[in-house]
Length: 332
Ligand SMILES: [Zn+2]
Image (tube, rainbow, N blue to C red; front, side, top):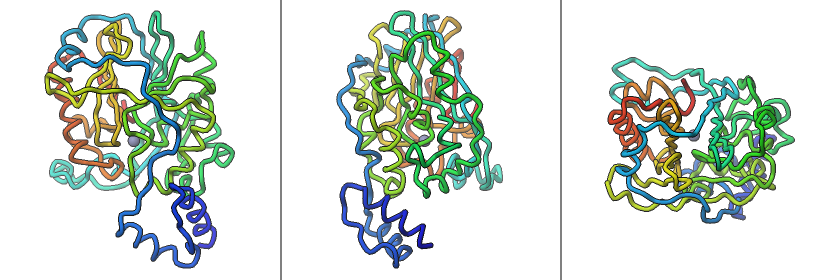
């Protein structure tokens, strides 16, 4: 218990420089009072700046071109097998989940990295996969004790670690396009060469949540030494279909869609490949069951009503484009 208290004290004291004193003897009482008083912490203190990529356009304009074959290749790589609580991945209180008698327990999932090869703009990763150190030596890369316990990193089985994935690319990465900054999506960051441009949704680092008091120092450690996170400049979608859409390279090949809810700055991507369009949902939907039954994620999401709206927007996109290859956050 003393170890736990000390760890909490250290990790929480790093949050916004707030005074979180006298934790060791009254941890449980303080934790509950912190929840009650709404004390929260930002997701990361890592630097941000406006993105150099992305031209706003309407959802309708994007949809007018996505069914045409495009020049971008995409490879989805299973970086690690993992298992996490189903109640985090699926809203088990949803009437459809109740009717299906879904219960909590370990749900088998994967952690992915998607390799995007653009003919002239280079090679990008969407999310980072998992660095071997996250499983083998988590303390070395700044993964705190509490985070290891909460994430159950011991349940992660690496299939392709990020270093191996980066090493087999024929040229240096041109960037990492993040769906969001949850730890399992930046777990490959220790293997991403410093100086690689990083992109994410607006406000992603500045979202405040109580749970970030425990994860923030780990997020900051994983991002340490990396470039400032470039935040996409979404504009309102004139067609009203999405919270915002960007043509990332201005050539109609790769699009970022603002899908707030799972996190404040969550982003989905549409990629035009020679075999048709591919949608990367990120964690707006983690699971195959959730997608097929129109049930949003559970406790892992920050703002469930907004997550519901964003999931509906992506399901609407898929319904209008039957050829869309939908790749979910954590299951095939
Ligand atoms: Zn997530």
